[in-house]
Length: 201
Image (cartoon, rainbow, N blue to C red; front, side, top):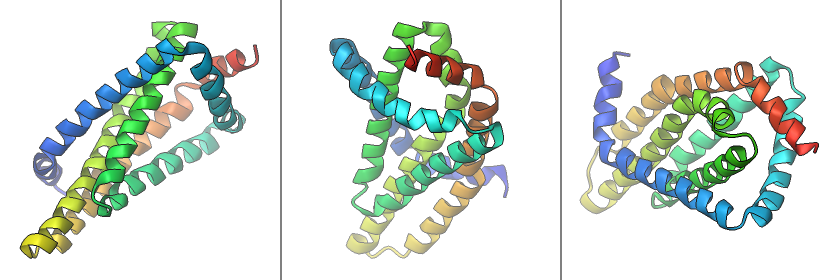
């Protein structure tokens, strides 16, 4: 598939991407502020849940960890796209909730381990994973827009738009998720070990 296809599609969903990026940034701030204002309560609830999610993953070999992360993120991305049929609301909620969680995690990492641990633990795979999440949610909103215009204006473009979304998902979103999982499972094991040792204190 020519690179122009991806560029043209991104141009189509540009405004949605911008709006969701702003929402993601705001939700990160909201999550961080929530954790900062209620540190003991948030850490107690959140760390226990995070511990339950991380501990099984930490016991996996790198290849299995890669598979676990990739499939988990792939499932989230698929849900973000297909759930757009429900008035485009769920993709927006997915962005908000993930931003909120990232804000809380950022506060905990920054408080316990410092900025270097935060950046080295989240940034390497985040530069691939976050755009993939936003693009998926934007595609879900775009899908709802196409459905809406089919119902209200009887436009005949719904099938072609859905095909474009599928192509973009295959050629852009999946590769981003692949590289994100690759980095997270092979390049950040030391960070995961640090988190595990923190939980065992």
